[in-house]
Image (spheres, rainbow, N blue to C red):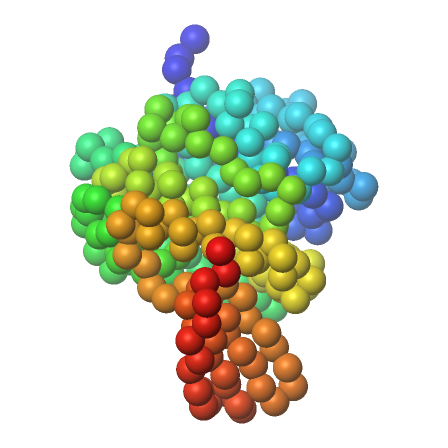
Length: 279
């Protein structure tokens, strides 16, 4: 049996509306030496039925089910069984362009680096907007240069990782916004990256997505953001001033950072107030 080159982990929870496009984009990749690990995280819609239908047609698809434990736990279960030389993550309401894996894998191999990063596009209401634009194919070494190259975009998706170097890393479980703490650790462990501007990841913005529910999960946002900031400080990784969470009101808003708060009225910053550390 040929060794799997790339493992693709897809956590799935009640995304039947978007799942067909997601899975079709993955199985149609020009790079075929992949395994597709789909973790059904206790879906109550037709997501599991859709996954099982595809698994019967494509033996590269592995479907596992668990009680709803949130995305971090689902990704961790995928990591436990992955066999690929490289690994990447795709969310079940997102999709990737046809040559996405081929471009990332070939760049990582050719440039002998441990991460390959793609450009990212936001799809909302039928319109596309660039979320992260990588202009050149270029190599970076060390966590600080990598963080600058991706402009503080700590989404787990949109990147291909050398699995051997991150196989023992795990996502925080039981919380939302678990991406950033994992990604900064992966960057620190891998320490080399190539940007691949022609590889595109599409993340779909919709009302049900986690990012649209920030006010519902303030405790999770604080916990994961502080973890990111603390890890960066402890390991001398320079990141942009990271918003721990944002407090939105009708006419005004407060951006809470680790060491200060900024007050905005009608979108204009009116003062900065130093605060004690959260921890």
